[in-house]
Image (cartoon, rainbow, N blue to C red; front, side, top):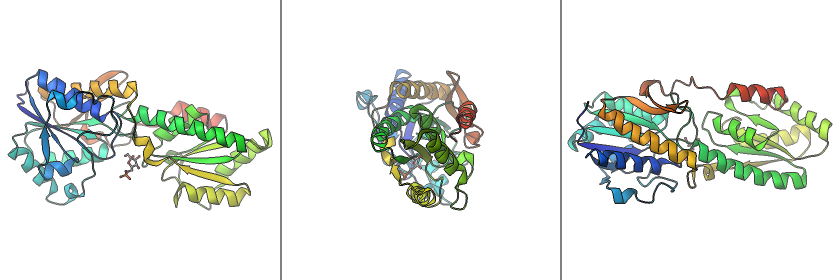
Length: 331
Ligand code: F6P
């Protein structure tokens, strides 16, 4: 058992729908255990600058349904400087913070681990990113909402693609991982899905993606054709890929970059529940003495996973769906 009197929380990196629901669960759980909660603003920047607020129950009223994060988020180059982690630990100590909860992705967890070298309190992570690229949890907070947002957009693109019998390349976020692209591509019935996991595309090696297009044309004639392209799949981006394809096959290919729309919006039910569960679990586990762990969910159960292993990239995009998409000739 651990005695925690003062707990801090921050949201870091790309914001994800459900972060507010998680902050709410942390505040409510901590309050129920008579723990004072503060929230740092703008990720680790707020910690370094000691920019924070007390979090009381009225601060978390009516935020479960809101996208973004009431604490604001940011990336923090200052934490990567040589003295950054020690300065952050010093700030935590000065403010008498017994434990810190970081809601973010594996980059934010790397920062947390760096701070741990200088900090005697407890540190725990909660996975919040639309990318779902964090080991130790089946889903990250925000992924389910981003998937639905992407689907809504892709379905609309399908309508116009269908009307014009056009080829569209729709770029989805994911940094360097294809979780969102594979999931959205499958759910949208995309004709082709391009993810970094399937190898790198280069201007000299477009054949693997041209062949399925030509095959579909032989089979169906002129028809709508949607390719989901994970960002960072092609040098110069998806617009450059659309141009290269247009030239190679002689048919106009349109690019549509969905961009930050994927990070916004009210979290879907699954994200609100995951965020609530993991936020509450993180507080409970801190009280049990957990340190340098991430609160994740595997097979429906809340679990702890070493923070140091969250970025190992052992979690693979669904092999069954990859195999099926290959089987139908669309990868
Ligand atoms: O990690 C979340 C994410 O949205 C990635 O999918 C994307 O590559 C990145 O953040 C974009 O970051 P920024 O908003 O800083 O450009």
